[in-house]
Length: 194
Image (cartoon, rainbow, N blue to C red; front, side, top):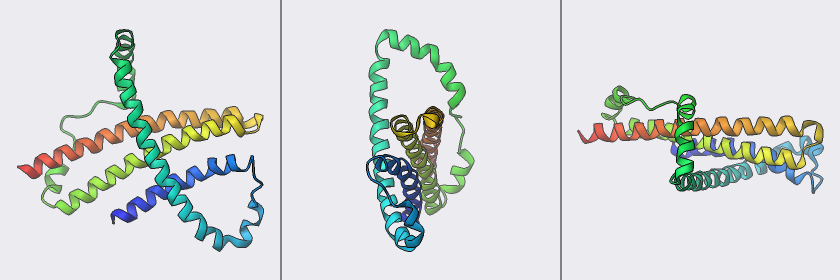
């Protein structure tokens, strides 16, 4: 079950990443996209493993970058002028992301704590959402850079803007989903220990 979930989430990230990777490659190498229909079975056999591997790379890279930016944020936030700006912007951030409820998952954790396999499956589903949102953020960022660097002038601004909006939205969703899955884990562990 866990492998199937990972397979799907890595494929999602990898397939999306393959769009911007192909856009970059096509600027240097003429890809025979017209003749893919003649070899679609072979293409599928080759494409999905490559997309899966690309998805693993996107997930690992996004995890690394998010951790580094979080550490950088802590360092920047410790400087007095920056901490004032953060204090000023915090209400707007909390408005968009929301605050964690202190009693979230209490009832579902009570039920799931009686069945460890169900609790683990639920936790895997929550973590899977985190990974997909994290991968979407990195793919949106890479898509914006790719569009800015390689897209024709008439579509460069709208595509870059759309990707940057998706990046911001994906980061907000990642933060919210990550907080929810962390809260779920804490509540289930506390219920299991009772």
